[in-house]
Amino acid sequence: LLRPAYLEAFAGLQDDCPPFPTPLARAIMDKELREAGQGTVEQVFSTISDEPIAAASLGQVYRATLKETGKAVAVKVQRPDVLESICLDLHLLRMIVPIWREKRRINTDLVGLVDEWALRFIDELNYSKEAANATAFSAAIKQRELNAVTVAEVIEPYSTKRMLTTEWINGKRLDRSTEPDVPKLCGAALNCYLLMLLDTGVLHSDPHPGNLMRTTDGRLCILDWGLVTEVTEEQQYAIINYIVHLVSRNYESVPRDLVKLGFIPEGKEKQTEDEGVVGTLSSVFRQLAAGGGAKKLNVEQVASEMRGLVDSYGNIFRIPSYFAYILRTFTILEGIGLQRDPDYTIVQECYPYLARRLFTDDDPRAKAALQEMLYQHGRFNAKRLRRLAGEFQSFTETTMSSKELAEASKKELILSPAVKELLSILLDTKGNYLQEMLLDELVAVVDAFGKESVLRVGRSPAGQLAAGMLQRFEATGPLQSLFAPILLPGQVAASFVKFDERDEAALETGQAMYELFEPTILQALETDDIQKLSRDRLERFLEGVPELSEYVPGLNAIVLRFNQKLFSRLWQRATGSVTEVQYYRTPTE
Image 1 (cartoon, rainbow, N blue to C red):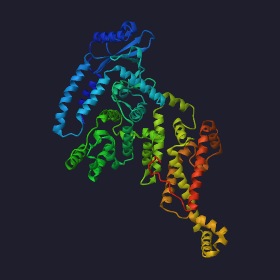
Image 2 (image 1 turned 135 degrees about the vertical axis):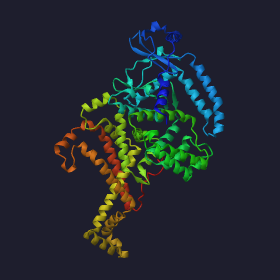
Image 3 (image 1 turned 180 degrees about the vertical axis):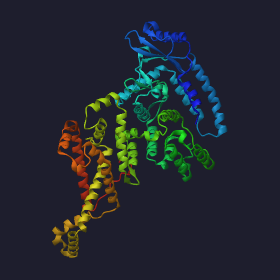
Image 4 (image 1 turned 135 degrees about the horizontal axis):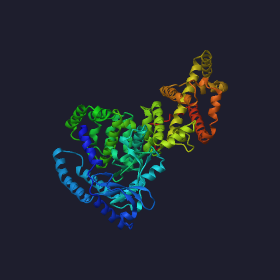
C-alpha cells in the first residue's frame, strides 16, 4: 500500500531514533539504582558503554558488565519527560476523533481505540511491568517446551519502573540474518505468537524486526515486552473458529465469526445473514487468504465490493478496540514473511498451530472446531486429517531448538519426536475426542466392508441358491419355528445386506485413508510395496520395541474400545436397532 521509501522512513521511527545525551541517561540510572537500594552506576557495573548501542522513541540501551558476576547485560533507560509528551498527544487525539467519527459516519468506537492505546502506552512506560511480562512468558514457553524461542532474562535487583536490566543476547536481527534456519525461525515466530494469542492470553504486540533476533545458538529471541495486549478465553475461541473457517475455505461462515468477534455493531447482526453480504465477504476473504499481501490483492475490486456493501446496507463494520493491537501484530508478522516469500500466506501458515490446538484441547468449543475441520457435508474428510497430522508434526519440529533437532537426527530413531508426540495423542490410554472420532469412522469402514463382502457372496451362484431356500422357508408360515436353526443365520446375514449411501461414504473414507497413509507406512518400513517387505527390515523395525513400548498400553486400550464399538454396532444391526454415530452433533454430549 506504501512505497518502499515511506516504509523505510517509518521503520526508522521504531529503532533508529536520535539518542538523548548519555550524561542525562547516567543521572537517571543513578537515581533509579539509589532508590532501589543498589548504589550507583559505578558500584553496580564494572563497565558500561559510553554511548547507547540502540535508541528508540521511548528509551535507549547501553551494554554493561555486572561487577558482582561479570555477566554482560543490556541496560534500557527511559527518555526524560516522555510520559508528559505521550499524555499530551493522546489528549489531543481524544479531542479530535469524536469529530472525525461523526463527519465520516464511522461505526468504530474511536475514543475507545484511543483509550486502549493510552492504556498500553502507559503500561509500556512502566519497565517493572515489562519485566513481569518477559518473566511470565519465559515460564510459559518452558512449560510448553517451546525450545526454539527464548527471552532475555531479567536481572530484577537492577530493574525499576524507568530502568530495565536484562542479560545480553548475542545474535543478529532476524530480518538481516542469512543463516539457513531463518525460514524455520519465521515459522516458529508465527506459532509462538499464535500460542500467545490463543493460549497464554498475553500477546506481545510489538514484533517489529528490531525486536526479533536470531541468537548465535539458532533460537528466536523476542525483545521488548513493554507493549502487550490481553485476550479473554471467549475471544480466543472466537478467533479459533474464525481461523478454522479461513484455512478450510469456509468463507460463508466468516460473517458469523465477525459478529462474535465484535466487528459488527449491535443491531446490525441480521444484515450479515443477507446473501449479498455473505457473497461479498466471501469474495473479499478469498482474496485476502490467497497470500502475497497487498501486492497480489486486487485493491480496486476489493474497494469496489466494499463500497457496494456500504451503498446497499450502510456502514455495518467496526474495529473492536481489543482487536487493534492483534491486527497490528499479525500485520507486522505477515510483512516479515512477505519479505522472504512474495507469495507468503499467513492464513495457511496458521495450520501447524491450529492442528496442535485442535488435537490437544478438550474444551467443547475446540472439539466443535475439530469436528468442523474433519467433516464436510456430513462426510469425513480424510485429506484434511492427513493435512492436520502433517501440520501437527511441522509445529513440533519448528518449536524444537536447533540443538534438539541435531541430537534427534544423530540418534537415527525409528520415530521422530514429532511422530512420537502425535502417537502419544492417538494412543492415549485416557482417550480423547480425536480418538473417539477416528474409532467411530474405523468401525463404520469395517462394518461397510463386511456388508459389501456379504453382498459379493450373495451375488455368487451359492448365494443365490441360499436366498431362494430362505424365501421358501419363510413362506411356510406357522411352521417357521421348526426351521429356526436354518432361518436365523440367514436372517442375521440378510440384516447386513442393506447397503446404503452411508456405507458407500464409509468405504470411500477407508480407501482415502489407506491411499493417504500408505506412503508413510511404507517409508517407515523402507519398502515401496508391502508385499516386498523383507523379513530383515521387519525384524529391524520391531527391534525398536524399547522406543515403541510406551505406546503398547494405549494400543491395547484402543483395540479394546474398537472391539466394543464394533460388537455394539453389529449387535444393533442384527437386532434392527442400529443408529449411526453422528459427529455432526454438538460435542458437549
